[in-house]
Image (cartoon, rainbow, N blue to C red):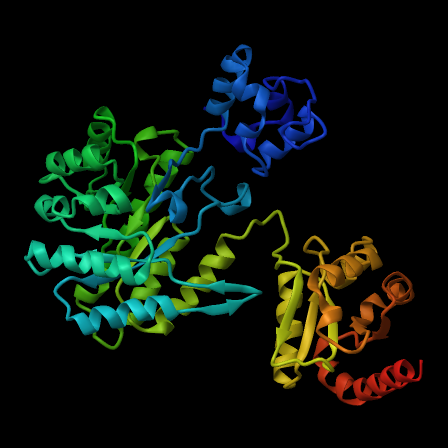
Length: 479
């Protein structure tokens, strides 16, 4: 297998139809080859390659060339599935990492109805706004601890109905898993886990219901490889690996995860090429003081996020455990080749009305975050019109011609801003002063050139906005 980072566009182009038909949405087959290599499109978009029998051999060869060393596995129904794994490289600087680590919050079926409902609500309500994105927890893992199969089934269905997300089902008792019946078929949960003791019965369940499964081998990579080989032999390919999480031996835990990912991505050992699952929740059963457990669980989880864990089972009910983790995950899984962006469009700060100022900025996530934060600190109610500058900051986007009148006009039309405010005044960044007249001419809106630093925006609005608004409204009324 040739690593994707060592492929060239020419190698891919040679296997494409070379007809430049445009059915993929690109102008040429070479452009399509470049986008394939940059993970910006998929092989299936080349219709001739997929549909024409004469290209079948080339299609299969390209699939092999572009095969991910770490298999992509999903759980949950197709319309709301959660995808894990599917990575090409060990390190994000080599290319990019694709599917962020999933957080599954543990709940025991022996807990009271009140405690279960409370934890579901915690998962649903957890939200943090960061660089224009909402960071959330992903799902829950229901653990069979009651010994009562009937209760287990009721709790699983209750969580499914209340949470509305794909679930992880945790039990080493195959009878408890099998009792879920139609739930397995309809909801396609991730089963945790098949071990050296129960693998035959769990394998049978996976084959019958076509559900993905975690294979568990605590510190024993040979056992994991043996289990993988057996499951593959019987046609179960949607599997994940758990080499064990040892809170008292974090270095050893990290070594196991790193070894498996290295075997998959560097040594091309196919039996290791599956998503990795860690269980920081085990901190709560380790010899750690109770008041330290939420913090230590976060430390274990952080270590495993940057050491290749694709799914983590967590237990803490404290928001402070997860806040640094969701930020770490967001930062770690951004594409290092592209600026971090937010979706262009109209945003609000505070509670703006029809006379509130309109601030224009770029869609570089850090710029938007700073601008909105400065407005919030200054207690300014405003509209923020984010234009598409392809992720460039203001000064760079002005120099590159991305911060221009056409981009502002497009954003204005799509936002419907003219129906939200009585005035026609835009405040643009000081660094974009050179395009002020161009924007006025193209849009028909009056442009105020704001300060260079957005921290001065509140003072600028306090001293300049009301006067500009009075002048505009007076002129409009006079006209």
